[in-house]
Image 1 (tube, protein in one colour):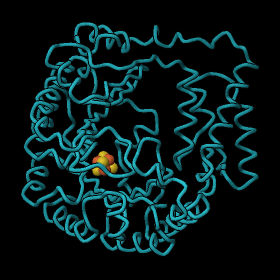
Image 2 (cartoon, rainbow, N blue to C red):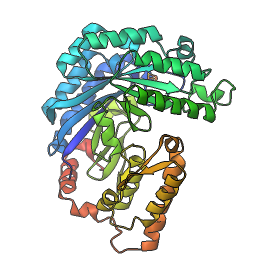
Image 3 (cartoon, protein in one colour):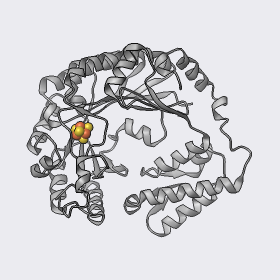
Image 4 (cartoon, rainbow, N blue to C red):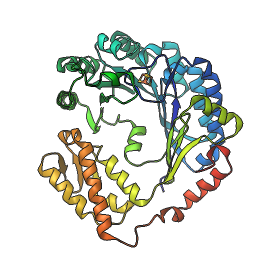
Length: 417
Ligand code: SF4
């Protein structure tokens, strides 16, 4: 069993709410930052036993806006991790930041304290669009933030961009890419706008100024081509990096690696068990203070489900999937999956290099449909095989899982796993 583990720390505070955001984050709750920091540190400390058998090699502070939480609180959390778990010296430690909440002094403190990667939310080079989607910074502020990040000594910077924004044209997207490329980030994430129910933008989902699917597809293919020409390797549907500068933490998610989440609304996947933490800031703090469980849901993952996730996540990456890796997880025939992937190769939506299948950029545009059909093929294969080895016995056989569960039962926060 893999002994490496990534930690995800959720910081749910933002200076305001963006119109498209459906992450768990709260604006106007600054007075809860200190109690939340106390609760997080207590949660991490009490989980020391669960983390004991692992080596931590990535830590990701996501949100929300972690940079808005302040360097002192962030370092207190990171130091608590160091005291509670075996954190490798050369771990990747990422901080999500927004341009309006960084300063040179704070960045220097963070870098000296062990943070070594910044993921900056830039989204667009068009100030009118930024304002219309509720961002609280201009592009000029993003450029200034990049200068400060570099001045503080960070050598690993990622910029987050969104295409398909309201009123955005192809030229506007090209301008965003070109101006961001001139900032020379090591990594870029380009996400297509998704208008989720419950967000303020949802009311305008059918407005004529929202780019349609065809335009989003053009913008995506333009980004893939432009970034490739500038030396960025695509390693996942939406992620591009200079050689060796991919996000180790995020790649862990996409390759089925283990991670443990702390803080409100965080998710974990450890020892074939997936669990989530309650999505209520005040309740989270109260539960930690009173020793009650913060677990909202947990689910043991069978071999079949693990193999489904392997297919689903693997096809999001340019590394793709292989028959051998699939059968290492789930010893069942690959025939129907091979057949489905062969069809996509013929349609120009996938590639096969003799060992691995992966999607082409046009395939990535249709990834939801392709992945669903591959998973249907997997289900048909299982049903056809009706093999006696298809059961969920993996859990009983895994000694590390037993240790994890035994340790969990002693700690109230983990009761119920
Ligand atoms: S800054 Fe990020 S987490 Fe906060 S509201 Fe905007 S999109 Fe959501």
